[in-house]
Length: 61
Image (cartoon, rainbow, N blue to C red; front, side, top):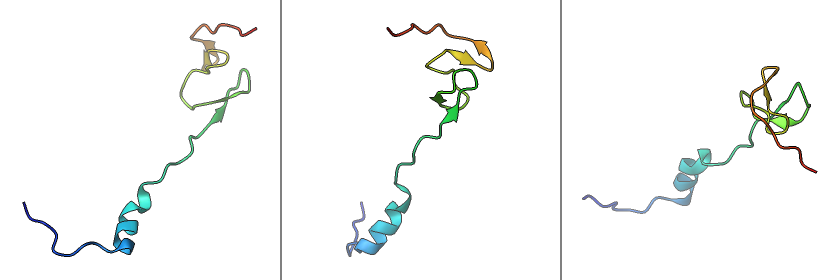
């Protein structure tokens, strides 16, 4: 296997890692309970998706 003759500089390493950052999750508002939820997913708070209840959610006391 070939080995590098010279080490890469810090600038070159940092340019390569420029896209390796985390992005925040995009949240949408549930039209039924107005809580934050992931888009195109059933709401974990009320269980509704596209104005229909698709999962049963236990109520917290």
